[in-house]
Length: 446
Image (cartoon, rainbow, N blue to C red):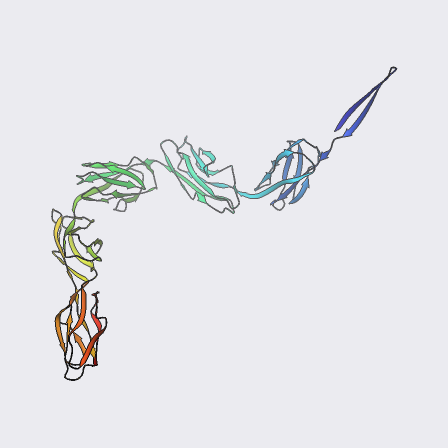
């Protein structure tokens, strides 16, 4: 491309023109290609015209040079088989020789599978990774147009169901793709409801669920039906999500007999929800002064009873006719609790007559006397009472135990003749949950 400049000179006799021609600066477009597979090629274009065929990795230059200041737009006009090449810095303005264009090629893989059960004249919409859409109008093989990069993932789902049918996708998701995927299966069939009977429900609050979908059952209801229909071959699982107050409901029926099964070619109608009134087990607590008491019902449900309370009640309720056993699972520290009226059969009312009685444990105070001369006697007291006459060196023990948590204090009430006895070790303190055995009385001659 040339630029022209004009310079004019005039005189009285003639007009002369001086024309100068200056070349416009040109630049080349260079690209760097990486990831291109062996024996494969990619065709690049600039501005939809200037083509560059690349058959290997490395650096390459477009045949045409471009004037400084002109625009460039690089695109891929022909992708390599089984790969996709993407351009970085694909558009811009030529300033000089340009070598910052990068083409990165990666392997790609097809996502395909098989469709079955689709009724004639119907179609459905499949999606992969929530973006690539594919309408399928017949049974047999199908394949998504958009491939997945090597190492990528896929997730096939039904975007729009065919009218009057429901289709399920199996094998439709995976990650770290390294080969073509052809194992996606879509099975379509008629849809069927799940329903059954309800008996004994005289309270509100019952919530059942099927495969995670919840349904509230009204007080006094005699039947139920889930609004969600399922396709042939789909599994269903009906269970109680929330029990109604004062009642216990259970699910029976279905293919497995406990609310579970697989949809066949008809509506499921043989499920049954049976509810019965339940009763709580509780009673009174007396004497509990310390923490740690745990009660257990039928060796299953436990309750922690805190000091100072006068009653208890298990949260687990039992139906009429059920046996119950209340036992102490853990004793409070320093006390022993026993259960009265703890075993019987549930009638038609809450159990309130179980009695838990706790008493505080008591422990002996003892020790040793040393240095007492033969024939001498020393008199000891505990807490100013419970006098104990000791007539020889060796062990001693007070007759009156001391309650857990109470104070004990050993003193010498009467000294032996010609001697002085002192309490040297562990002579006083607060009684723990074990006997005191370390009191030492040391007698010395005056």
